Length: 296
Image (cartoon, rainbow, N blue to C red; front, side, top):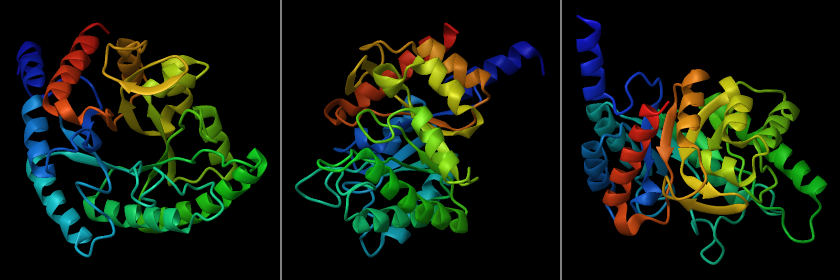
């Protein structure tokens, strides 16, 4: 087969020809679609993976048939040739009055621990690339030192559970949280003894908002520990997920860096507030990704 023909076939089947990573889309951006219909839209649009946010409306980990639902989803994904990562940033799943609480740094975090263990269980059924998780915001009247102590102790338990289950975790730095930057996540990993089961999730938009070295510096700092990437745009100092091209993210530089560090995981668009125009947003995001890739 000629190089020209091979390149043409690659372009036909892969939205980013030559990329070692797989483009996906976060299901939290399709909250008004049943999951099977969301998959239909995303397949037509050119994606090859989902970042599955556990909870309403797509897969509640606490329902009696959650494992069966996950098994059926895995069959569907196998038919499509798709990958999946598990996301745990569900709003109001554990507390109907306060989103995301309790977190790993709250005094009473037992329901969060149960949830994370269930996420790992479902990741086994789904054969997911990883389970992504984060620290949480330091509660009022708690010192950072105490929050760090709680986080380390609880992460030891979760990492051990994941390791025993054969699941990789991707710890995500989040603006405003105890673990805010990739450097913070690497410090946590070091303190835990650098376990093989613990990698890093990087949100490209977060890099614009808070990372001192920007998106290129953050991705290179994560390096071969990078197991999950979330794709969105942001403005400096503002934690608001924006469509690609609406903020300050240098998307071409981000994709180039992923290619250069030989990232082979999923890079999934993360726009949880855009469900009202999910098909349109998914299509525009794919166009932006393709355009940025061509500019490398």
